Amino acid sequence: MNEPRKSRISALKEPKQARSIELVAAILEAAVHVLEREGAQRFTTARVAEKAGVSVGSLYQYFPNKAAILFRLQSDEWRETMDMLRAILDDTGRPPLDRLRALVHAFIRSECAEAGMRTALDDAAPLYRNAPEAQAAKAGSDRIFLHFMREALPHAVDAEQELAADMIKATLSNVGANFSASPRTEAEIARYGDAMADMFCAYLRDIC
Image (cartoon, rainbow, N blue to C red; front, side, top):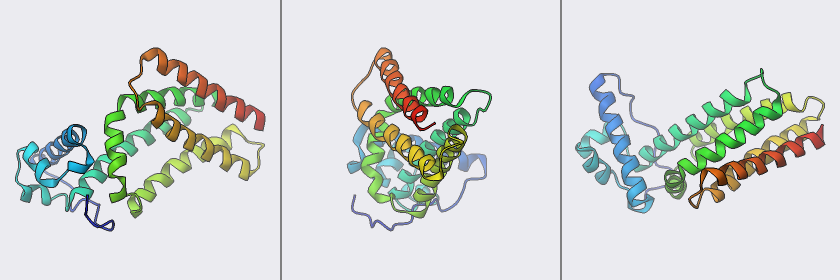
């Protein structure tokens, strides 16, 4: 993991033709396999190309270095998480606290299902954590939570809404990662989700 922290992490080009799309999909599938089986410390472009059955030169047409591959995997995970956040928190047909409870359960279950991959990506995070692309992704999830808090806490001042959004988002991320570090049963996941949801809902009711 000795590549410079400022290495380019965006893809060199987007695949447009079916063959190119299949090639990139094969590279990403191989990258997931290598990352989960061998970890971030042994992750190399050569190993990914070998697993994908393509030449390193073909891989470099789309990804300039291993940081770019890792960031693409992380970006896909962030995008899936933000889609989940929007789908649940923007569902105005349900009361805010019901949405928050549903989000907690969905997030904890997702953390447990993808624990191995997420741990490996966290190990690789120094390669892209401070990149503009990574900061933009974080800002996107911050906006989703803050928008929800403005609806859930309409009478709270801005500072209280911002604190609630930051506290819940940070707690979900950190506690969820810690909980999912060990294998969990469905019953354990449900109990943990209920406990976290109860805590968050009590906190928001207190602010109201």
